[in-house]
Length: 88
Image 1 (tube, helix red, strand yellow):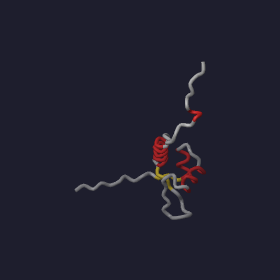
Image 2 (cartoon, one colour):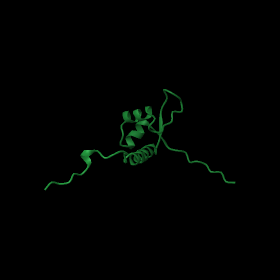
Image 3 (cartoon, one colour):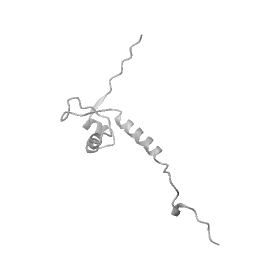
Image 4 (tube, rainbow, N blue to C red):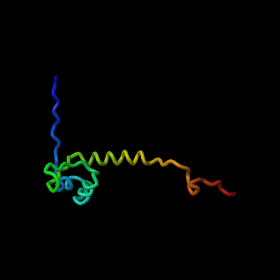
């Protein structure tokens, strides 16, 4: 029987994460508050927050999947979008 060990995930502070990704510290804090990005707070509320290094990539992937599934809207085509026959 083989034992598989997970390699430890590299964690960054909010400041480190913001410096390596195209997102500000304030935006990161908002995303954390809204639970949009994965994070770890080992000391509980009020302690330092750590973000996995691949969290931004996962966030972008989730947004791509959501936008792809949301691109088709059901319902009838509005009149202004229908092509009208040209008059002679």
